[in-house]
Amino acid sequence: MESIKIREYTSVSEVKGPLIIVQGIKGAAYNEVVEIEAPSGEKRIGQVLEARKDAAVVQVFEGTSGLDTSGTKVRFTGETMKISVSLEMLGRFFDGLGRPIDKGPEIISENKYDINGFPINPFNRDYPNEFIQTGISTIDCMNTLVRGQKLPIFSGSGLPHNELAAQIARQAKVLGKEEQFAVIFAAMGITYEEANFFMKDFESTGAMENIVVFMNLANDPAIERIITPKMALTTAEYLAFEEDMHVLVILTDMTNYCEALREISASRDEVPGRRGYPGYMYTDLATNYERAGRIIGKKGSITQMPVLSMPDDDITHPIPDLTGYITEGQFVLSRELHRKGIYPPVDVLPSLSRLMNEGIGKGKTREDHSGVSNQLYSAYAEGRDMRDLVAVVGEEALTDRDKKYLEFADRFEREFVTQGRDENRSIEETLSLGWELLSMLPERELKRIDDAIIKKYHPNYNKPKSQV
Image (cartoon, rainbow, N blue to C red; front, top):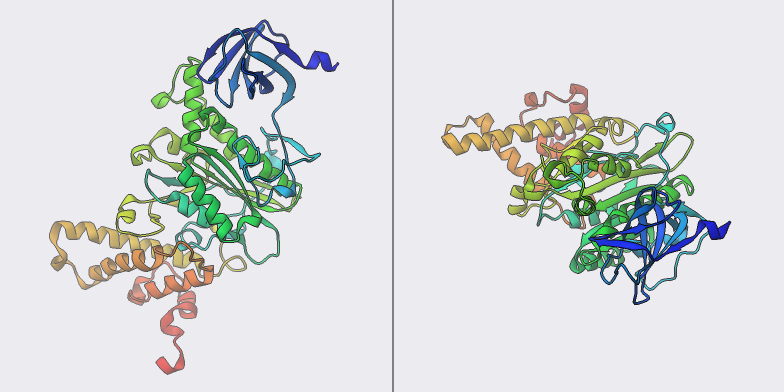
């Protein structure tokens, strides 16, 4: 039986980009793992991308350099790609194919999971409705992350999305419950400098014990990048649904992942879609993003924060555009705020969390959360409009009310949006800061907050007796 299952061939007919074509084979299956031996004796791993009647197209994860059509051996294993998963993975660094890169031992476990995962039955999905505190005010107050949600960060080249992702990985936690929380951090196509930043950041802050890191470097074969998020998400599924942990998965940078998809598509001479990306990119992204969620009857959960750098800061580019259709909102980083020296440069106006209202309020964050968030958003938007007006008519033409909103926008960016790279604000601190900013506006302008809430939390009604 085993001899039928494992077959070896030397009939490579073509080597093209990251692909090889093997002729004269029988019984090849889609996604089957293939072991490739180069003429030099070097061994590599591949996966069947397309199975025909008598041929198979195989993608080689370590690249096809050194392979030829005469001396290359290809061994079909009859298995899909799996990863050994264990609690011992916490605190470890792995490469994009799940091999240790921290000088630690291999993960040996009886639990081996197919990296393609198993679709969650929609009927068994539980609705996301629990707050995750990241310690970052623009996220926690204005665009709340909810357990089981998928909420991407839309960034641009040169913006500090890596620093923000690392800060979220260090600080994120579920409030009010003594439950295990883990972070799976998967980096695709990053430089050595970025890799060293992440490794040193996690190790120096003591956050590493709850983090599993998968790293695919820029000089690794691009084809390896399509496996990295699958490795990370499979590990997350084990920790969440077998070990009852709450898992936050951070994937950076999904743009590099999509470039790898485009490379494979071009090698297969497929008809390109928008801007050369394959027409199935939406489906492919969805197979990754939809692995987030909660399951009825299971304690654990998977929350996703994919990070993608928008080419030319274009939010209509296919990658952010398709991502926005699949996920439940987005955080948008602003180059204008970054130029002002503001960190994190989150622009709250185009940012959105569609599940925010499910995870905030009394018993979850605080009863004033929704009103404060809506009022801050409204006042900041009006202040930004005043800036545009000043550019046309000058500040002298503004009324006293307009000047208040103009000042509010400046203070909002300087005091609320801006915070230190190691500053971990609680939701109470964030809401108190929001009330402090709103107190500079006349009380009659706070139209988005109930009067009872204003009287309970507004600083004017809560001054110490010595200040009354």
